Image: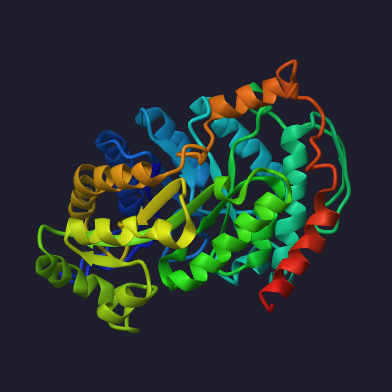
Amino acid sequence: MQFGIFTVSDVTTDPTTGATPDDTERVRAILKIAQHADQAGLDVFATGEHHNPPFVASSPTTMLGYLVGTTRNIVLSTATTLITTNDPVKIAEDYAMLQVISEGRMDLMMGRGNTGPVYPWFGKDIRQGINLAIENYALLRRLWEEEVVDWQGKFRTPLQGFTATPRPLDGVAPFVWHGSIRSPEIAEQAAYYGDGFFHNNIFWPMSHTKRMVQYYRQRFEHYGHGTADTAIVGLGGQFFARKNSQDAKAEFRPYFDNAPVYGHGPSMEEFTAETPLTVGSPQEVIDRYAAMREHVGDYQRQLFLIDHAGLPLKTVLEQIDILAEEIVPALRQENEAKRPAHVPSDPPSHAERVAKARAAGKIAGGHVAGEDKWTGKTAEHDAAAAAKAGAAFGL
């Protein structure tokens, strides 16, 4: 099972000192956090994508490209790639380039984001958010899987005889997660393509997370990708840990109370009771997250948000060490001891996906050979299925 961290890249005043990093300081701190996570032996570092203050991660591929050369083993990912407001042609080329220079040590997570104004900033209509996600991803798949693309859709200019460059590494596109907090249509999309589904449940009760993941698993099996329990699932999470619970709560409380997202709202006790945020000893974090599989089944990736709310860099690096040295070994041991033999332990690696494509005869001359049965239907089927997903959830 993969364990790692993700950042939302907020620039927040430290409520205990009054110090506020500037954008440059925050970006450099994020790079140090990722490098430290690699050195500590964590499996994944992921960055969000935002285009508004107080967030600074506006260019994920630039950040991850730099980290390719300054880390050794960690998988570099996005916690959100905005499939709705980015041009799918640019996504295809940027992430194929990242895949090539990282030698496959990357993946990415498609998402719609949580900032409404980003849509008009990039010339899009927020009311078309789901439709944009559906059409843009269908085109993205074709750009990665077909060498020459003729295409016409609703939301961008047509393409005639277009080839995205560079081609995906070894003829196999990067592994894609579809991230969602509340939209069953996105779970449906992930299932339709046989991609991973990441539920960033940091603000939601487990009852909601369970429902979303179960729906994705059922639809994954429906589309013939395998049994429901073999679907590739990831979860978000948050924690703050110290040797004893009292110290953790006392240290983290001022940061919680002033956090840009949940500060000045529910108390820390109320929030930790209703969401996966866990503030306490390492054992309390272990106990809370070891129980996640009871709600969502055996899953493959667990990412934690630990660098938010103005926490100083020194504290964040200490949290990474606690995670890597005390929490992850216990969680990995417990989860893997209970995992059935037929259920994947990790998301598929690049090497595994290349071997599978070759065995299926889908790689020719270094490029993907033709469409598979899932991409033949593309956006029309995807849109209809997404509408049914929304109806199933009463949306």
